[in-house]
Length: 210
Image (cartoon, rainbow, N blue to C red; front, side):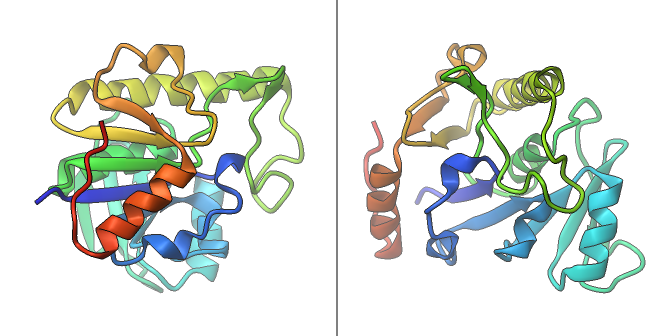
């Protein structure tokens, strides 16, 4: 049987999707301020300011990634319950969460939600939490571009090193960034199709994604 997981980024493309529909269908990992609206199985951060916020306001299990180590904390813990290795070259939280799922679980399919890592219609995709605590009010175009470029590069490395996994970027634009297009294990899927799959998964059935 195929095992699957879900990584929730915070790009605006996931607005309107009920994240609770993922519960019980596979491992669910999230990034940074996601905890304000939804409790994933593991919450990841790579940012020290975000880490402080999470420690003060989150009652779930979270992972702080730094220096090639993933430190796993339970709620209110002062010290990590477990420390696992993760690649030192990864600097972006979404990529860290994705690699962790690849290396430390047995999933074979990974669905990426809210991974808006490109320019569209002359605008850079926004983060759902921009303008809130520990997020910029409005990033300058150069800063946004640098962040996008780094994310794309980090994810490309994850795809390259995990060719035995299949990654689905969920988004109604069905967009795959140019730098990902050479990876045959990276595919687009729209939200309507994704919701159909979730219904199949709920009933314990497999469905061809080709």
